[in-house]
Image (cartoon, rainbow, N blue to C red; front, side):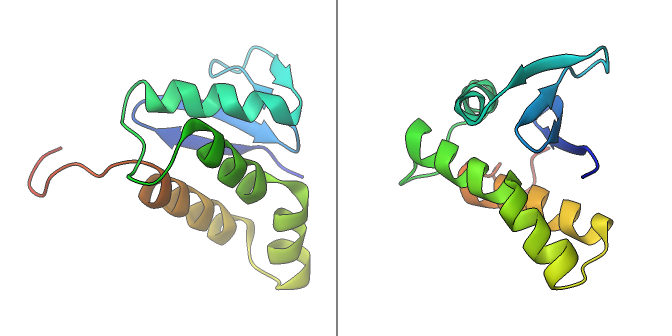
Amino acid sequence: MEAVAVDQLGSKVAVEGDAVFRPDGQGLLWRGGCRYRAIIELFASKQPLAAGHTVDSATDVLFILLGPDTYRAFIRGCGWPLDQWKTWVTTNLERGLFTQPASGTA
């Protein structure tokens, strides 16, 4: 699987399977599903979680959306191009997990 850049509120990490790589491209930051929580905590420190989500529930969503089974289902099973999957994942993470800026603000 290719690395996927997840950009939210100025924070960028590359995720490949259960490995998360440093934003500067200088190697592995952490490995393991439990580290999805650290990603959510980082993003939530910059933009509040959407109503109805806790760090735990947001971590679960991130784990499922970025997990290898979801990736394989869309890429191999449904034939989606990688760029379409990346856009779908990023859009759903941003809209589903975090509060949205008020209309007319950056």
